[in-house]
Each structure stands twice: as structure tokens, then as C-alpha cells.
Image (cartoon, rainbow, N blue to C red; front, top):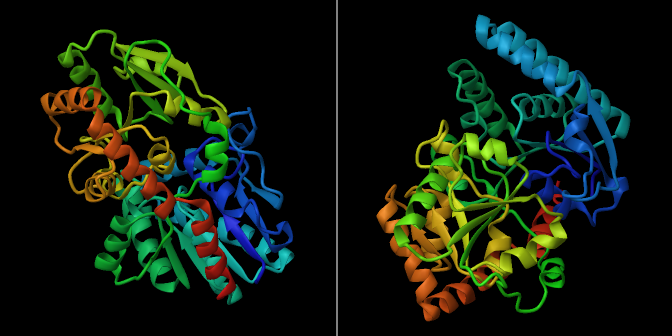
Length: 395
């Protein structure tokens, strides 16, 4: 296997889903076989006990700091300065290129999440004549809502997709999108999780000891799912189920959630270490998987694959999906009958789904059995590790 560099804004031990996926994929790789490159941004990479541990390979932190880059990009938008964006891109490319030469890398993986990382990694690889792999955790050009940045990213996306040795996507919808738009055949690697580690930390037959029905959500809450949470809270009140509560385990503060109307029959919990999450999920009556019906980036919603999907499927508790029709999440859970899907912006139907999941024991069992089978078939870590290993070995 050629030594490779992994370029990503999110890297272990940060708390993001992308960071966790990369941790799982590469934690058993020989640290001599790769290095990691990211922006200098220490507040994201301090391990506060809630993310993964660091990977064993060498880390390179690029300057200037992420916050400085953000200010420069805002200035470029304000003055419509394509020149400023090009200068930042070329500066980033040259930084990555120097590291690739120093580490004698024979390939580079560029991950989405940052405006400059994928095209800079591609251009550095192109100048050195080594393979470039694009790893798209999200739809790269649709992450930017400002028209100026959208245009810049679209131009770069076409070039780096057509020039990539391989393209990795997290789901079928993203694969179809790139095939339709660019004629590019991508490889699907579902966002994996460690099923054996998950089972070890899940406990045995965890029960809800509060005697009040619980809908549980674990993960970040932001504008990609605000409207779905608003619908859920309204629907919960419509069910008139005594004591029904939404329990959220999230890095976001209680004040932040309340400012964004995530309040009412809601119990706020601090974000927990990863090894405690399985037991929390298995104590739920319903696990909630939301995506917004009105967000700044509907195409991101359509192709989104939240990192928690595998965990939810393995938790052996019914999953309530509330996401737009045509999104990967709605399609997957409906197609495999591994969750209850409400893909309309309709609180009455959402209330009906909650009542059905609480009252129909046989339905709960059926959905849970189907879900666990999908966790093992599509999201198990060993499958994902083999796919990435085989791809890198083939270079």
C-alpha cells in the first residue's frame, strides 16, 4: 500500500460525525502508512472525553487558523473577490504539497467539509502526479449557500470529480447525484460504526426506568434539523400521551436550543462520552432521526447520511424518521422497512406515528429486527474497513 495523506477539517478526537467515521476507518491502519492534514484550530481538536481518541498517525496543522480563513472568505464574499479565494486555494495547495513531499506520500484523500480542502488536495496531487481520492461526506458544492461561494465550489467540483482516481460517497442518493450531474461512478461506503464495541457498551436489555415514555435523540442539533424538531414537539403535545418527553443528548447548550424553539416537553442532557451512548439509545421507547423540511441547503438534506444511522439501527429500538420525501434517510428506512417514516411536513401524521410506535408492540419488534439486520449488513465497521483498504491497495 502506498503511503497516503488524509486531508480533512474534522479529525479525531473532535466530536463531529465525520471525525468518528474517520477514526473507525483508520484506527487499525499502520500509522507509518499515512499522515493527517487539517487546519490549525485547537478548540475543535481538544479531547474533552466526548469524542474519539486521536489516531496514531502524525498530524499536520495548517496556518492560518480556521477563524482567520473564515474572515477572509467573508471578505471575499463582501467584495466578490475571486482573486482572494484563488490566493487562499493556492496557498493551501502549496502547504499540502510540501507535506506530501516531506512524507513521501503516494496518494492523497481529500474530504469535504471545507471550501478549500478538496480542490487544494486535488491540485497538490495533480502537480505531484499521484492519485487523488475524493471522500464526500456531504455534497461539496451544495454546502455553500452564498451564491459567490456556490459558483466557486461548483467550478472546482467538476474538475476534481473528473480528475479523481476514485470518489467515495456515504449513500446511494449521493452516488446517483454525481452520476447524473457529472457522469462519475462513485463507491459507496456507508458511515460505519464498531458493532462489536457498540454491543459491548450497550448493556443487556436496558430499560426505561422513569416509567414515562421517552423519545430520544443523540447528536448535534442545528438548522439541518430544526424544523423537524419543531414538528416533533407539536406532534408530541397532540398525542396527549401522559408524561411523554423528548430527551436530547447534544453538544449544543440548553440556551442555544431554547433560542431556536427546541423547548416544551424536552429534557436537556449534556453530550455523553461515546461509550455511554449505546445504553442511552437502548433505554429509549423511540429513537428520533430528523432532517429539516425547510433549510438553507435542501440538496444537502437530500443526500445526507447522519453518522448515527448505524447506531440507531443497532439499538434494537424503533426509529422514527421525520425527513423530506426523496432524501436518502427516508428512502432507506422505508425501502428496508427498518423504521417508521413520516416524510411529510405534517404534525398530525407525525403524532399518529408516535402513537402507533408506542402502542403497537408487534410493529416495534418487527422494525427493530429489520433495523439490526441492516446495521450488520450495511454499517458494520469491518465491511467499511475492507472497502477502504482494498481501494488504497489498488492504487
